[in-house]
Image (cartoon, rainbow, N blue to C red; front, top):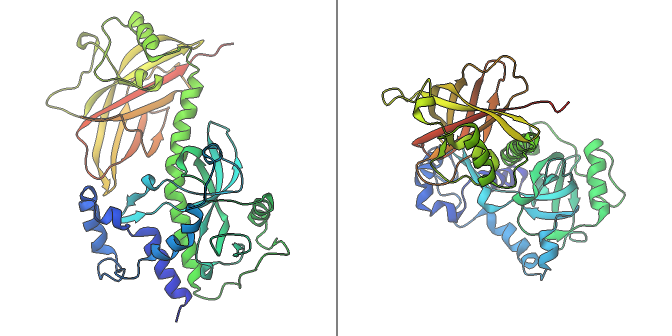
Length: 389
């Protein structure tokens, strides 16, 4: 007999167990071992023959087969049901978080492509008070429910193509329930109230975790972009910026190609004779940060600052944590922005998944998503923009 307890068990597998394409990928071998050691479903092969993705796949099959205009597919519109990109699935503390389906509620663009979404789930057996159930009459692939209490920020570029376009009344109903869990429209089903030890309570805890996993990285990327916008650099290309910096600091150089203006500022190397505290071959904890002062969009000062690393370690199986401090920041510079990249020996610079920065002390703590400790270099820049008044 199907029950909420069984539905919760399947939800845990669907949300936090790796799908076949991940389980069979050699890249995820070590992460999969850690998962099998703690997962009661995968370790006992309970998933065999009853893959929790099978039910959802059959529901969405007919939607995927619908012909859609590429132009419409690329345009983010309120009311669209879209999957978070499958490539954004990630390991955290031994579990693999599968990207959810989300309903687009608002096109914000307060920074660039930030949007507000509500998470959804396909098994209405787990719908609780305040959830909006969409039956076959309103959702062509069958029942699904939206979680108005579980909304968060994503980037438009985080989403895969549209599966369904819902009318404005659906978005309106979700926004109403977001403010008042009892504000159901006349046409909507109302789930039963919670009972003691209700499986739906534990399901909601799981859903909040899923939402956090996929929103935190999007928010961090947006904040990094906001800092970059705050620089208001008046350069049309990386080459023009490099030329300007070389005028300020003759002999400065770049050991790898930078793809953004922020990378150009952060990845620049000072010639050895200009470094008061150079990285030592016997002490890998000493580095150099770049101090940049910008006025009217142009670089006016470009100087090295000593940087000390206190810890460089795997904080958990999925993140490399680096704890450090930028020293000797001039006292007269306030409101300093912080740019940081991890530079592996091969590949593109990596931005932090999480970041903490204290401009008063120069202390920082950054986390980079990685399955193993990376051999490479930390590139840091502190940037101050002089007032135009």
